[in-house]
Length: 54
Image (cartoon, rainbow, N blue to C red; front, side):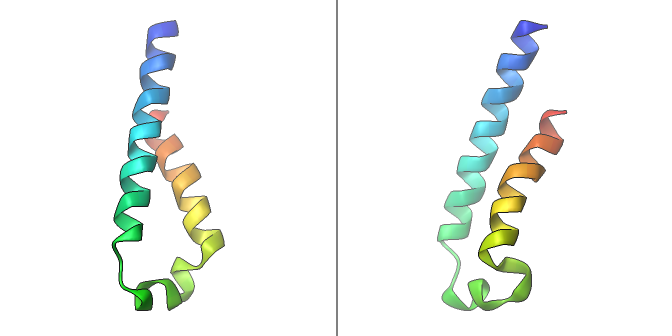
């Protein structure tokens, strides 16, 4: 069980890093869209990766 928790946490971390790196490569217009405001981006980074872990 401990191994699964550790590997799940590592997977979550890698997903967040890759998602954030992908977001940084977007054009400025991408950030102007309502669905891509800072709160939505933070929420996506937090909850989408956790959904994969569980």
